[in-house]
Length: 113
Length: 113
Image (cartoon, rainbow over all chains, first blue to last red; front, top):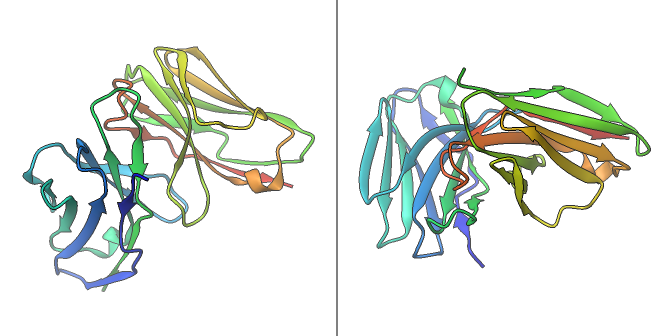
């Protein structure tokens, strides 16, 4: 059973601090990794994707991928109350066109003002 | 135009009704997806259209019938639904039918009475 695991939270982080969200996956052959942000009652919004080992930075967001350890993380620097949301990790196992994305159950993040 | 639109935003229907959900994108994406999301759960893939042809049906009951009239439009026809079908229905699109970098519409909140 291919799985994507996330701590459901809530993860509480003071405003201005770094929020660290983690995700592990079971299929060692996984190729593509995505982070979506979902506000309550809204649709998921793609905020980061990463395909290679290492770090990828975009503004206050950094995605980190470690294929050997089978985890991907999302760091949010200078956390803002507007970052409070559920963060969904999604993993695509292979480059095959018909291999679908597997979503984790999401981590609820709460930024404390 | 860099967004996916969905109509209606909210829909309430009885179990004997027939209704349709609509999705539109003008990003030139050639893959479009229907997902279903229940509260506090991740999105579940229902259907995938690639180049206007149905490529994936995730064993969805026949009371859900997808249609892709052209490369920009995706419909989901609903008939004889059950109360347990109440959920947020999300449309997404991606440049290629490889599940990478999917962009979601705002969703239709469906309630079946």
